[in-house]
Each structure stands twice: as C-alpha cells, then as structure tokens.
Image 1 (cartoon, rainbow, N blue to C red):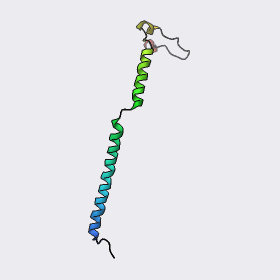
Image 2 (cartoon, rainbow, N blue to C red):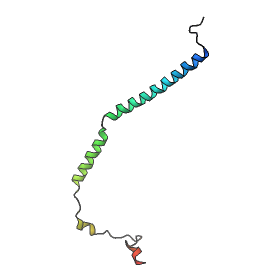
Image 3 (cartoon, rainbow, N blue to C red):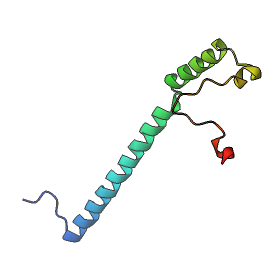
Image 4 (tube, one colour):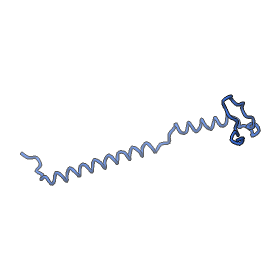
Length: 86
C-alpha cells in the first residue's frame, strides 16, 4: 500500500524546494539573531568610556615647560640626534 504516489521527477522538485526552504530559514534565523543582539547598546562599552573620562579628569595635564626635561639616558642609549653628527 502506497501512502503517497509520486513520480521520480516530482521527488527531485520536492527535495530541491525543501533544501532551498531550509537554507532561507537558516539565513532568516541568523539575520534575526544579529538584529536582536545588535539592538541593545553594550554596557561594557559605556563603562569603559566612563572609566576613561574619569581617568582623564583625575590626571592633571602636564605643562609644556615640563616636557623639556628629558630623563637621564641609560648606558646603552644613543644620543637623540646621533644621525646629525655623522
């Protein structure tokens, strides 16, 4: 007793339709998941920005005159303008 009588050519069309439907369903699921996860802003990003702003407020800016003081050179370091002397 046959439940469904289908010709071999019909099975090919049904299989291809099922495969395409499955592929489109997977793409739709991926797009839905991406839209859902991207809709809410990240709390980590805002926390990092707040921490950066707080550090900038806590640290005073150096004056331009303070930058002229160069730290002492180590024994292995060359002079900063060694190339001019050649």
